[in-house]
Amino acid sequence: MPELPEMETYKNLLQLKLAGHTIKDVEVNREKSINSSVADFKRELIDNKITHIHRRGKHLIFKLASGKALLLHLMLGGLMYIESDDDIISRTKQVILSFGSHRLTFIGLRLGYLHLLTSKEVEEEFADLGPEPLEPSFTVQTFQQLTVNKKGKLKSTLVDQQFIAGIGNRYSDEICFAAGLLPTRKLDSLDQSQILKLHSSIRSVLEEGIRYGGYIDLPLFKGDQLTGGFGGKFKVHDREGEPCIRCGSVIVKKDVSSRKTFFCANCQI
Image 1 (spheres, rainbow, N blue to C red):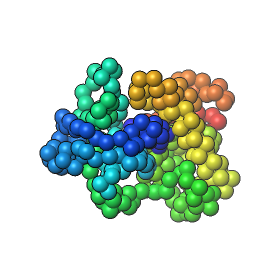
Image 2 (image 1 turned 180 degrees about the vertical axis):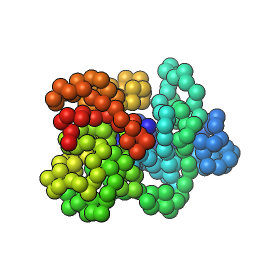
Image 3 (image 1 turned 135 degrees about the horizontal axis):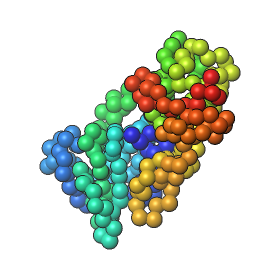
Image 4 (image 1 turned 180 degrees about the horizontal axis):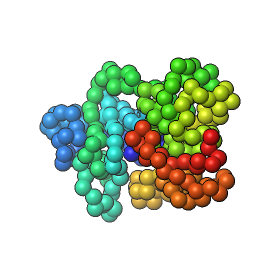
């Protein structure tokens, strides 16, 4: 499932490619991916302009000139690709937004969705989301307040979207490794120096993920050299049986809170 770095990468590239462009046509091949009838969805979108693209947690918000917005969550397996007439991707597309010379295609939206909402409805969708970990307001003091009375395991706490928005299975492993902490540790067992290190690791790991374009191996468009650059840079995630880059011990995999979790049992404490 795409996490904060992947969705931030998409947001930045889509802002460059689509902001200011008018939707000329809409094709819906899976009505369950949207939240209205196909006819209503088309009527609302055709001749409407995308004015700006935002990210909140793992969601993208396509702001429209009409005042409404498209709320996207790719969930598990969802992807996007910008086609042109001479570059057509051979994948099943659930929704296609056409801008004339190019088309934004949504792929793998079996669990994901693209919903047309009012601004108020978008706000309601985000009412329970935790803070954005890369915002200036996410200070050490803010993080310390969040951790007060939290007793869960690090792994399950980091992926809790009501605790912090945007972190999922992959980056939670990397954050724990960067902080030198076992994902099985209870949050209330950490001392202040470990809390500080965890806060720093959240920011540094997510920033590195964004810098290298996240892990998704499908480029967003032909010639896209950014998307997926982080795929080979995971230090523990999906590296079971390989040597730890820090101490040389073997990376192990364990189910933690029903999630496959990778860590070094030697240098994470």
